[in-house]
Image (cartoon, rainbow, N blue to C red; front, side):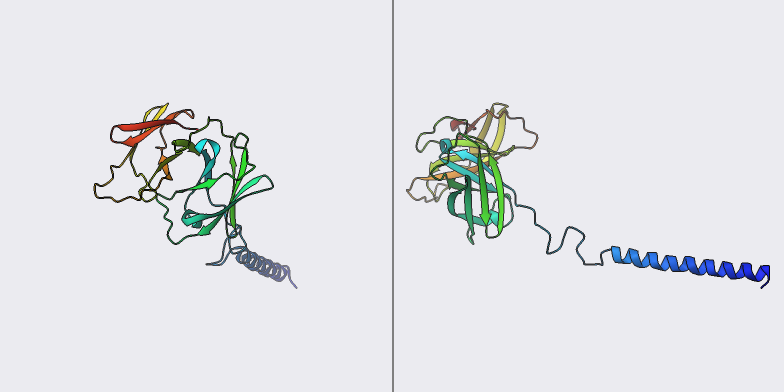
Length: 237
């Protein structure tokens, strides 16, 4: 074989080898790329769904807990049972066809089980079927609250839970909220319609007060609330 023929033969072998390498690389890339419609890494049926957002705060001087759910199935569920298991307050929920989740948030009143000390930090676990989420609830630092007296608590950084008493069929409705100062939040309720009929029972009424993200409010602020110019003031604890 001449030098020219040998050089041509080697060039042909080199081109064939490079082509083969390209085919192998393309095949590997195709195997590593999810096909259209397939779940990306970390997703799919075997992925662990994120725990639903749930917050909580003490109300009634530490005699009850306000549990707030945000969106998802927990937002349209009711309290089924409350128990103390291994030092954890477990709140079992059940699905409800009547519960409503307004503004993507809903508050539930949870009685404190016997044996729970509100003056120390507590762990609260909220369960709905096979979904559960845990909350670290700081110790209650406020004073006692008399029976049928209102109380307010921080639920997270921008939400306040207000517990008042009145007819179970006519809960208060927030008309507007303003921050009068870093030490004072003022909430005005809507005036009930003149023809509104309410039951004559006395039940706890839980209201969520959501603050503007830019509002500056002290953690030791007070909350004033009422209809028109009649207002009560309670500390937020």
